[in-house]
Amino acid sequence: MKQTYALAIHGGCGNVVRGRFNEEQEQAYLKTLQESLRNGQQILEEGESALQAIESAIRILEDSPLFNAGRGSVFTHLGTHEMDASLMDGNRRRAGAVTGVKRLRNPISAARSIMEHSSHVMLAGAGAEAFAEQQGLEFVTPDWLFDQTRWDQYQKALGENRQFMDHASDDQKYGTVGAVALDRHGNLAAGSSTGGITNKKHGRIGDSPIIGAGTYADNATCAISCTGEGEYFIRDVTAHRVSALMEYAGNNLSEAAANAMKSLEQIGGHGGFIGVDQSGNIVMPFNTQGMFRGSVSEDGKLFVKMYEEV
Ligand code: ASP
Image (tube, rainbow, N blue to C red; front, top):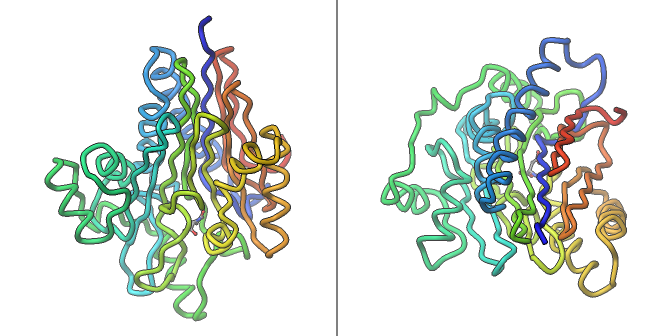
């Protein structure tokens, strides 16, 4: 019997409330989310892999300055970009990740290259970039990655000697991105990509490139991509926790998602995640005011949302 397919994406979460964005900005966010979903859907429709779909959907979000990943990434304390990304193939639980890259147009593609063309899972900084160069991946300059809004946020954070977590104040930036998918062959995949948090210390690594924390996929359970205060997701091993609850506690995806959110909240974490299981069920829990998100499945129903309510 022909398997169904499903795809969900997120563009980060935080103080995403009505009145914060004008009509034009709202439309720009929703349009880019739709474009990313349509792109991934086409790939799944044609019977290609979940891995291909999530990489491609994430590349569109990385290329948009609206989201905090690739172009439009936030600034570190030193005024530089340090981007993180990872992806995982639920089929054989293969994974790839990069951390602290400064010059790559699409960190998610570097993560995939590491998974497919090296014997490693994660490469950092200059070593990751050297590998990406050998693989022929595209490099960009800091000017290309620059976004004025991110720079203004960085200046404010520096002035106040604070780090802007997405999820704490009016000054939040928005937008770590991620995608999860089920393909027609029954394979699950997940990926996440981010610039991290504004005014982070040079060398700080969040959850997004850490397999099990920000990203996880296993065909036997689910595929998960997280967004939020990375330090908490690392401590709670959130993405893998959802999978483990399904595997060991017999939870279904929505029970596992609710239990993982409860666990995150117990340690004071803010954020959310997207998840999909073998039947194409999708979850998108978050405990912030909003989350840029969307999904599409074989029945053709596509939706995108940013606020808590519809
Ligand atoms: N989780 C990301 C990090 O901590 C940030 C985010 O999702 O906005 O680097």
